[in-house]
Image (cartoon, rainbow over all chains, first blue to last red; front, side, top):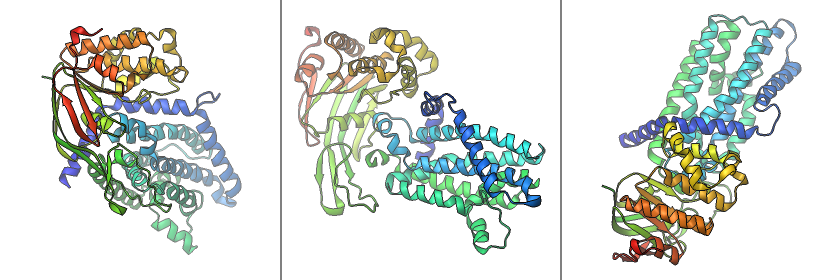
Length: 263
Length: 244
């Protein structure tokens, strides 16, 4: 186990030294995805605003909750879309990078960071839209926003191990691409992205409390919506982050040399 | 001192029965070799007891039928495959040219691709900038260097790949069938550069089915079959001075 961890840290430190590679490749990826389009990556912002607008239009509750709902959905969708994209792109990560993995000696963590950075850049466009929606919906810039920012950093910290775990899952179990894709689509309805937990519906209550993604959403959302520090959500998220790191390090250390034979 | 030393290297990998709901896939991916075992316990013996030593200035030609283990051996030397047994000791900076398209992005220009390839090989931006004009000049791509890579012919891609791979004076250069593309004048030029590299006390390992190429470039020849060394001619096949 110690040897596995050493191997993992070796892979990660080599990848960090090669940061220019994944930074350059991630930028190329973003450029390639929007090549020959007029709006370019601004489409990411348009898509996000269209989604939030649709949800607000269809699901906005009447009465006093109405104003806060736009902010609620804006943050919910920002975090959920980010996590969903990270997980669904990760499952086929090593298969997509096959020609690089079989032709270069780049550490695997380079591909992990490449996807992480790419997802962060894409989410950056949505963040701009999110902040605009928040300001328009009456949220005031204040100290609690710093807690939300801390929440975002915690999500960033969890991104590389999350990608690693899902990438190994996809390499060893190719069917997981479809399983994960389906679960994520269904997962949106079991995660409080656009519905609020009032504690009355037992299914909602269960889905709220036992879904780890709830807490990833709430560490960003509650400080801005309620102006409070969500201690419980932070604790759950930190534990989840550390557990994901532990699994990712073991997988990376133990199986990184096997991946080339699997893809 | 540049050197390669392999001691009883073997490479065995299991044919993983992937956990899948579909019918089992019996196609064999990855490197060639002998398939052994049956049922759920199939494995491929891609290399078996390979031992040899190369010193500065050696140019080894790898020959053998398809699936003999030539590419596998190159990938073990490069460090992509971890051997399952034996020892690999390599001294020197290794660069490899396996597949022309590896590490090139179709949408990016040739110039941008040089930067990306350089970064992947661990060069600094300053080193890339310094070598850029040499690489472009050697590739003879002219104005095409600022067009996207997808507009290149196979020969042009091969020129670019070879120019980049040899630009930073690798001490050990591994090549797999790269020379199929590229016209006669470029092949001649490429051979001269390989001569220079070997004269600077580098090592070249070249896998090819072209007997003529091996004859003209290499000083040693190793024949592989089924992952084992069938023969290794230690005496120079041909002296470098007499190269045409």
